[in-house]
Length: 371
Ligand code: GDP
Ligand code: MN
Image (cartoon, rainbow, N blue to C red; front, side, top):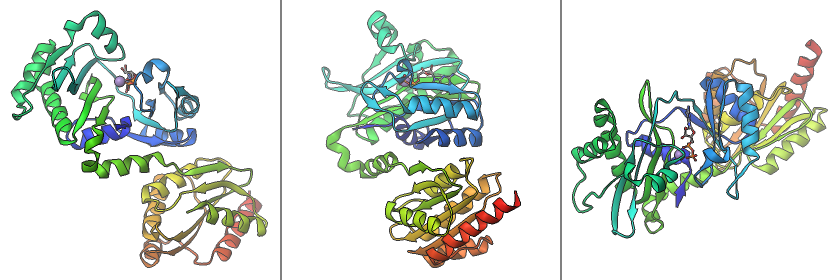
């Protein structure tokens, strides 16, 4: 099973390999809000399970949040080797001084793991393997013995890098081999491993776990599927952003807004079991959608926990500079905890959906009357 770059990076990072600050985006608006929060320039990368994205136009840069919106829109419309791009990784752009290649995989012929490394990494690695195979160092660690740091440094030395890079590159090779072993990987690869003024960073990451050992890595498999699931976000013509957990509840909330004479600006379904991060992400999405005057967050906790919702709301409010008018209906699982979090932060909430919808429309009308 191959993992998306973003997940592979999380795993590499948890083993001490440096990565760039980054977040996943499912829509151009989200790409824009992430880049304005994180700071520009950013690199915007298609998250697909095939390589060669760079050459296919799936890796682009943006110097302004507005560009990020445009670039993200382009990439989200693409198909890379038959695979539709459904989400993006937005990362701070690294100023690259040099690109290296390091990988651990199984040499089927030799029937053992092989480490490959080159000081000429980047998108041309396959061509390099054909035209100048001697520039790719191969090393076969003994799979029955512990792979030692000095062996990794020896590989780095053979790569022909500057002497001051031998120890740090060796350290990353050693960590990558440990990831490979720990996760029963088929492949663990960093191409490019980049040199920047801040040191070495994995600018790309590939990890394939042997299918027969996936049962040992269920947590990763679950996270993978979870990541694939985006919030459902539809833009509408009105000015009241409607967010709900579950499509039915969100539709009902929209009807309630309509019944009270309001117009929904969004349909946003955060789904069941949304985490505080997803709530935060959903709120950021609607807050970055210009026509929105009032947010109506309608949550009836089931699998979704009311305290997670409250935490997500509080985080989103902390992060935005916009004046936010929000009406919250919060009941269900962990409602006491959730309501207390809101109370402590001085944010009012309702328990009845009807009442909350009416309040949202009234608030919106007041705001319109003022402007
Ligand atoms: P791949 O083509 O699917 O392997 O995608 P990569 O993530 O390896 O990106 C392709 C190329 O884009 C890299 O070899 C880099 O040259 C370039 N690139 C990726 N991330 C950055 C970055 O943060 N800064 C700069 N300057 N270039 C990047
Ligand atoms: Mn790459």
